[in-house]
Every structure is written in C-alpha cells, then in structure tokens.
Image 1: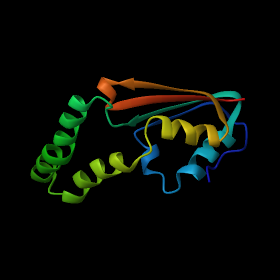
Image 2 (image 1 turned 180 degrees about the horizontal axis):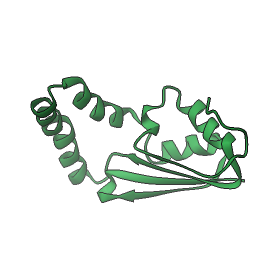
Image 3 (image 1 turned 90 degrees about the horizontal axis):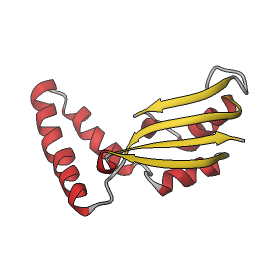
Image 4 (image 1 turned 120 degrees about the vertical axis):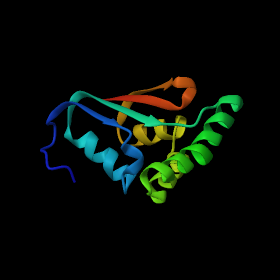
Length: 126
C-alpha cells in the first residue's frame, strides 16, 4: 500500500517498474487510489515488438546477447536472466491496456516506441 492519502496526486508515473510489481492489480489499484479525479497515469515499460523481423532481433539480443554480456561485466547471472524473463511474462500491449481499464482508468492509450521494444501507456482517472 502506498503511504499516501486518496486523491493526493495530479499524476503518477512509472518507468520500467510496473512489470516488477508483486501483485500487478493491487499496484494499479493503488496508483488509481492516490490519483486525483482527472489525474493522469503514465507508464513506460518494455514490450515485445509485433513485427516479426524486429521481434526476432529483440529476442536474440534479449535472450542471448544481453545475459551473456551481463554475466561477463557484472558477474550476476540472475539479474540479466531476470530482465528478459520479466519482460516476456509482462502483459504488454492490449492485455496491459485491459488491465488498466479493469483498474478504473479511462481513455487508456498505448504508444509503441523504438519498433515496439518499449511502450508508453496513459490513462485518466475519471
């Protein structure tokens, strides 16, 4: 639970963190709760490219290159295996849009970035 009163903020932003929520729906509900009426949620999160060509490049890099280089540089194999696994299992695109709407957000929009490797999701508390 966020340590803020209901209707506290005009905006809530999260960058590359929502996929790490232990309970996604609870986290979305908390963000909704602390927003004022007409407040805006903006989430920047990894997503999986829809285009087959870019998706294959993304998968090769994310599941082969990144973990290998990460292990060499940081000596932490878990961290660089966790990242692609968490991105793969995150409900991106329309599925995440639906979760936002189910949490009460309206006017939810998705803006893919960098060939769909990341997306900006916005929603309003009405």
